[in-house]
Length: 199
Image (cartoon, rainbow, N blue to C red; front, side, top):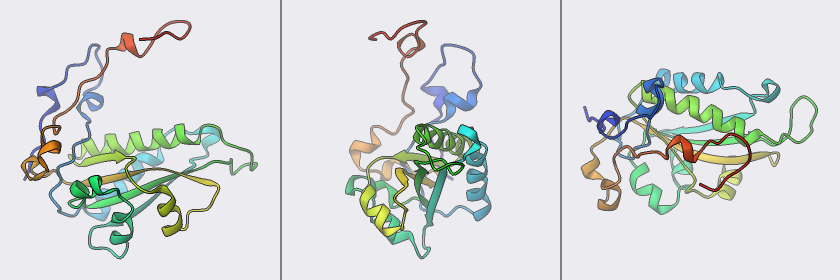
């Protein structure tokens, strides 16, 4: 079994928080092994419990499993740079969110915010399960809309690659060098009491 670099060797939180947050990261090296349907549904179950405005739960996850009937359709949505490492993913996911409220048809100004919360739940659950979960913007959203018959009132937000950890040495050299948990800006650069500031 492949082992990802341990975030404890690369990261230290500045304040006391649960390790689930700083141990999560977004590697690219995956083994090509499948994950079970039960494992996949656990990820979506975690996403289901994310907070949302008026409990709209406006996110939608469309997915393809390696070797399944939709794999090529999803894989072909990726830009070539992402195809190089997503070739070993077990699952590819397209995330969409409704731009209007189901309750009254009015515009939902926070649909992207809510879909991001659902993705965060999914990615944290993946980290707990020892899976790779990597969100990305490098894909053709217009092509995804057409190929997956996404209605116009939904925004295509992102794609996600999910899989079991793989050997980083099998990645292209430029990606191999980046296959370590990244650091973060200090809290002082992302939060301030009062008005906006330039960090």
